[in-house]
Image 1 (cartoon, helix red, strand yellow):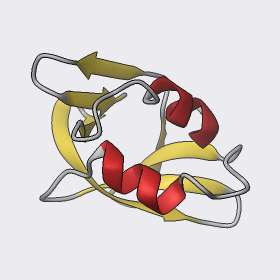
Image 2 (cartoon, helix red, strand yellow):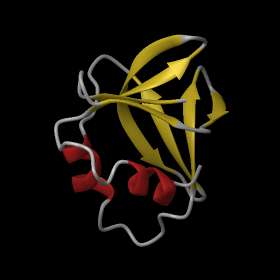
Image 3 (cartoon, rainbow, N blue to C red):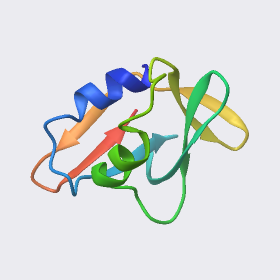
Length: 94
């Protein structure tokens, strides 16, 4: 999934929606996104990022066509989809 696709998918979500990563069938908070020369890397951590934080950091960025990966234990895991729970106000990258 490209980062631009990700931004399109979350466009209509509440600003306070928190994001998680599905890693080895476990949900972990998305706490950081780093930009390398040709990719976006989503890192797990202790506190989840909100849509508001993600848009503030990357909404005006020019090159959003880079691939989005989950980065865990020095491995890149491809992102294929997004599971949204409006009731609980969170979304999970998988």
